[in-house]
Image 1 (spheres, rainbow, N blue to C red):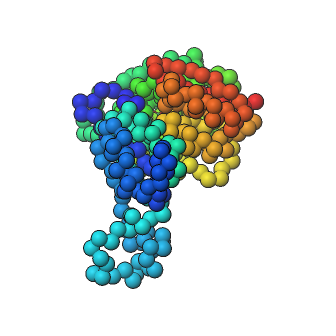
Image 2: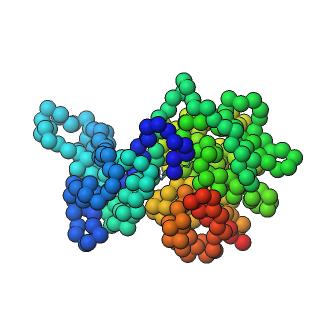
Image 3: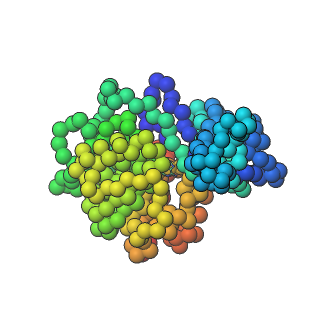
Length: 331
Ligand SMILES: C[S@@+](CC[C@H](N)C(=O)[O-])C[C@H]1O[C@@H](n2cnc3c(N)ncnc32)[C@H](O)[C@@H]1O
């Protein structure tokens, strides 16, 4: 899902939660180390594995030690490995490119003991010299302009929207077709006079979809982004568009919240399938709409089937380039 063709490709990172044992496709149940040995053998483009670390406070909170105050590091054996002791380890797999990361996520998606939490790209950020950008005209929506351009976000007399985004700070400039499909779906909802009071923008990146939703009329947007490195840029983008008061940024999906009129998620199939029940639980069954993007043609049928079963409606399908977008609308 790279937006342009940078000189050096940034790594793609798959975030996974791994139990103490994982069931491999052939049925063998193996520990985390053997699972990772299997992954090295079967996943293309794997650059490295970051198993994270456990602080003394976390070790105490997880019951690995009685209290962080009584940890005697001098007495700890040199090979003490709290990560290995965790019941669930939060691990990052680093890949050379997007398609390797997507393939690996697909490879392990159905394995018991391993859950895909997210996928993100490690964007090189150069605030001093941002790459020249825009404006990007998007059919069915309007225009995305660089944050430094003159003007204010809004909608013209023909219904075309204009929003402003700082390029390079979080995924989502409007150049990518998966983003364009979502923007067109949001604008289409406005044309159909669909409700926009509450919107959930899952995998917000630069905030482009949430910002567009407010400009199109949303009362409140909850923007969920797992990559905290881009939260500040997301808020800056919201301020540049004059929508900061209506856009709320968070790291995790809300556990319990009033139903949303619109839930939009441009992530990848493996993450959407993993979170299907939670996402469907957030969509209002009274005229609510769920928009899913980031799907390649061969991934869309499985995603459509899963969400259609959960929501009881079949999706409207739109396509741009190799990408498919699914919109599920309740009555
Ligand atoms: C393809 S980008 C989409 C960005 C923007 N919404 C757009 O449409 O252009 C996907 C974003 O989802 C984030 N993401 C991936 N998994 C996530 C998860 N489980 N929870 C929240 N955000 C996640 C990534 O960090 C990334 O910023």
